[in-house]
Image (cartoon, rainbow, N blue to C red; front, side):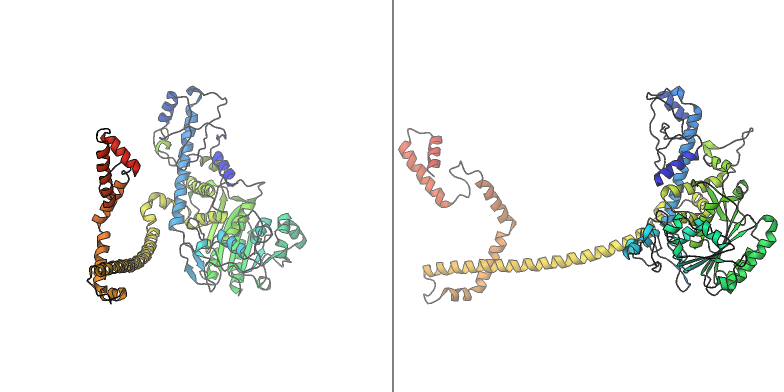
Length: 621
């Protein structure tokens, strides 16, 4: 599905994209170079962009035969060149994401006691870690959901961590009960339930109870409960209670650790919205168990009154708060994963003026749930907007720079008013092609944002230094391993040396014993020893002399000269089959053959030649 989604997105970036378009190879982005190549040859080759995405945006030329160069217009070549440049820009965004993973892979989590601590590289909570922990504990239920076990902490084994996974910092103080007021949207409820197969799970959503307040309980239950809710186990957690007003009372808020509020209004009643936000601040501050509050402001775009909530939160010491302004909500039949903007609600930037103050309902509630999960959204006032069709179409063009710069009638360069939006869309497209989940996508857009990507473009990091810290750690580990290996080698060498010394002593003693036995026999025959001396007595009395002879013999037979002599003799033996005499032959055999030669010569001196004599003697042997 990711392949289909990324392919669809790549084709939709440029309105004239065709799924069966021919591909044009280009080492240079110059239009003249492409035209010249087409004039030299009618063959078409494959695109190779910076991130190796072989997709073309040129028109479809029907037919199985080669197309003449005249059939490819300059407009088609221009579109192809623009498409290649866009793919290069997406490739740069992917390099930025890789840099985030390598350089900014650590996040901040909150301990159980509320203290903030920075996780080490590879120790953040990831979706794979949670699924692996649940699978190991047998807690994966129907449709991929989890059981009632407590959420795994951030101390999963390092072997389960992947250094190339983006790990957003997640809130760890959401608690086990969430309260909803002003909304009963099914998308929001299913994400909070966090128990349906085929969806990206949110690791820190382990709510045992989901409470909702509604004026008309039967109608709210009918709207909220569908097939997904029934199969995903939402009915086991969801409790819908009648509300006494737009906001809960202190008793209704009691017991909730997280609170999701939707406020509906218009810019004309900004004072009423500010008063409601002030009441939310008082309720949240008076709750003993509440730790997180997130407010979605629909319809109105003014954030007046939010400062009261921030003041009541005491910079997160009392509770952590988040505001999400979405403007007008509208129903979309099906989301296509289009581009959107999410950023600071105050001072939204130049691009905000070119966007409608509206957001699809499904996307809004998804962002609302994911904003509750992320640590980067805490203490933030955010605004989310859909891009208009005009803006989306403009993102299909490269940055207006270099050969793609736009000039007015006087030849002056025109500022690219869509540049910031194009940069954001490149990052979003890179995340989706890379496989980032929606929670990861929101964390990158909120935590780093456009400013982080601009800083990366303006000051590209030294790629050699980007991995310096990790390489240093690896070098230290390698040095430790080498030290262990050197120690083991030294022990092994000492053991082998000791064994060699023992083996040498055994061989010397064996040679000394043989020498003593032989010497005893020779001396007894020669009369040098008295008959009363036994062999054992002689061996005992001549032990030192025998050992000395044995050591001299051992050194001689292990010397290089002796070894070379033995090799020479062995080689000579290989060619002695047809020879009467050779160097190193046994003296007895030599003497025997000499006598045979003399005898044969005397008998057949006048009849046989030297060759015949040699053949006869060899046959006799």
